[in-house]
Image 1 (cartoon, rainbow, N blue to C red):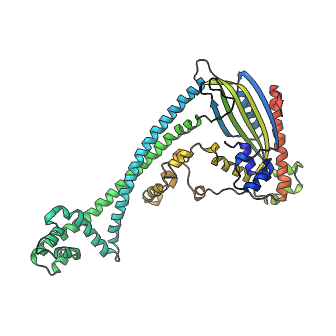
Image 2 (spheres, rainbow, N blue to C red):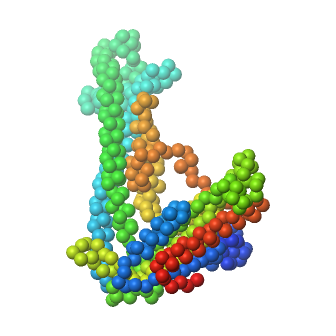
Image 3 (cartoon, helix red, strand yellow):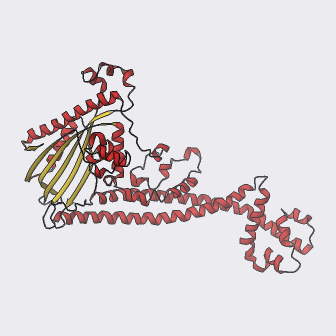
Length: 480
């Protein structure tokens, strides 16, 4: 069972907006209350019912929306669900559209996976190059130079000189008589002059000089080549990350559209019958109006002390009068003549509820919405990308951030999956990374007895005004 918005508000402030608030607080405590067990209790509630199969439902919604905007309540849509009976033509057509969106999104995500595998291979190569280049960098250090030379000589013996097979240094030293000292001499000698000073027979010394000369040439040229390949691989990594960003940006609208076209489950609700041509819609709007304390004090709604700027600075949070409007539409989809869209006529049930919330409670409400099934638009996509690719992103940044400071980019610009979540051009901060849960502090006496009470009164009045204006404008019967 999915929690409703009134239940979530009751979870945020159970003592004020839940009938069973004391019981669930005693049972679960303030943090672990399941919203589904909350019995909602708004400050005031009014309901309108409008039934007309010949008139469309859109004017009902937009009239209330415009009325809330003109009243200063700036509504925000919290829920937008729909369900169609499986036997209706509307179900079939929306199913086709959703399938097209899913196929397009899946195809682009397949391209993302292909490029991602390429990025993984490039990262492994870059890490190997970085380890090799560190040995060359150690040649410039007095403390580590000797060990670096020995390490590079070993690499040369195993990967370059070994190609000479029986005439390689190791093969001659370990398998041919008279050359047992060749390997040790090669590891000790630095150049041809150094090789001349070693006490060796002339035959070994001649071979040693040529191999030392070959090694020194390889040492110089291999470093140049390795650094060149390292920079080329970094450039290729950058191009592949750019491709990931493009593909992710292309995939996002298809994934969102496919999710929005998904129908919600109605379970045993009797409104939908498989063989009927029926549609059920649920919409929820939350309008907020911030209390203007100084203006309210001048109007006599608050004590005179609230007119003083110094006194107002002592309040750390704002209070809002809120109106929650819930729409439930049961309609009959009808195709518009010679057009590809539908119009809806049917029964509309509009519920107006009033609440008084402070800024911390509103933040908590938004957090609960994100955690609930109401806010899962891209939850699965995020789980398949950012969570599993956090360590990969660190590796990408470690290589692409090695540019001069004037050319460095922010981490968000380098993140190939930010486009999936609408953060393509936003900068990342430490605060945005660490989501801190909102904690609602206890109310002071002034907040409880003045600000909360004023917000309650304004929300109750605004709720009745919206209800009454709509009822009078349309001559609708009302049930309160």
